[in-house]
Figure 1 (cartoon, rainbow over the protein chains, first blue to last red):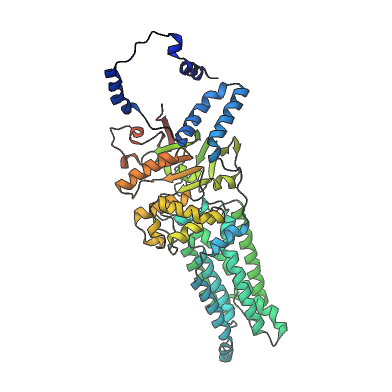
Figure 2: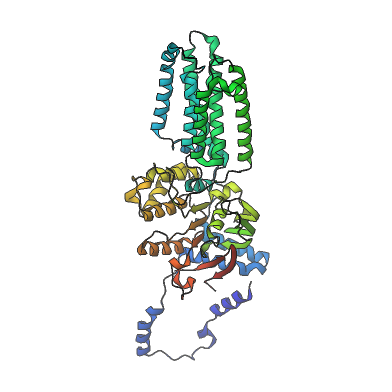
Length: 310
Length: 229
């Protein structure tokens, strides 16, 4: 044991009365009264468990040179004191859903109602749109899918680059879980809703279901992936503006873009080439995302001072 | 016993290319540590690095429990972080926000309600439980930040400028609370000295209970003073 501790222990164990019996004079009543007055001034509160634990933490380094047996004994004593404070080495690992669902709850009910309404209106608009016989080479469903997806991704990731995102980075989840929790759920729901729309719209001609699905699925995936990629570069607002401009440019220029017109329907002369380039670009965007997320290269780009996300 | 071990730990803030926190060698056990320094000294950078927000630019950082290092994920589970900035989802109420943070911090579902109630009471947020987080006053937001950091009962608690926006009474209560909690966990509180004590006083003398003072200057840890000594 440490010399200093050892000497302190010896000092405390000494009994002055036993060492020199009869050498003390009895206290007078005045002295006893005076002591009764003065003693409370020197009386301190009993140490709390926290104070004892803090003391142990500070005494422990003194034991660095102690023998193994002494260390073991001391560790057992410390363990007994700290028993209540102990936590298990690993808390039970929560499933992926534990962090997935709370992130979904950040999307308000109005977001889902708005999405369903927009998809419904686009389905209802198909017939009047076809009746107009405009040479646009696109249709309301194909136009709505990428527009909705870019808006939804931007809305779901709106905390990116804000102090809230910094706080979320301190949670026990990876950037990949952060992105997946938000984007994957949106994509899954939209794909399901648009698939139902495809089924309804091609009910009379089942052969058309695959080409029709490809017509909205490719732009939906491309616009979602591209929005996430741009979001990492320019933040939520920058990504939203750029993707909106792209959507607007594509809608206005249409077949003049050749294989880069991704919003074409089956009547588009560049349908196959457009969907192929769209799929390739989606693949590239996903590869880039995987590269960024695997290396956790997802630092907040610019952090505004104060305030939360809006 | 919990220990935070830093061996040559260094962080770089992506927003400040020319600033780099100089390597820190330090081992901290349970207690309260005030991280002091002027503006731009690197207090927040060090805290954000320890919170896992900034990537490690060098060195080795470990949280040891019973002499066993924790994995990166476990490190984050046992760490709580109260940022300097208000970090909220403004559309959520105080209750929804704390539930969201608790779930994200993997607090067992069965214990969330009880833990939230304890913290709401402890930080004087009980009456604001159904208010939107964006409607809270600056002081209440600060309390909310502290409450969310405590949700998972962390072994390592990092608080950035805890006294900011708090009134005198709130500061006093927080000081006592920090001293008391320092007996149960490692607490590192980044703090601007001028806000809290007069220049002629020794920092440690003004803080209740036992605490250590870590002084940072120009990204370098200058001094590690233990008020017990």
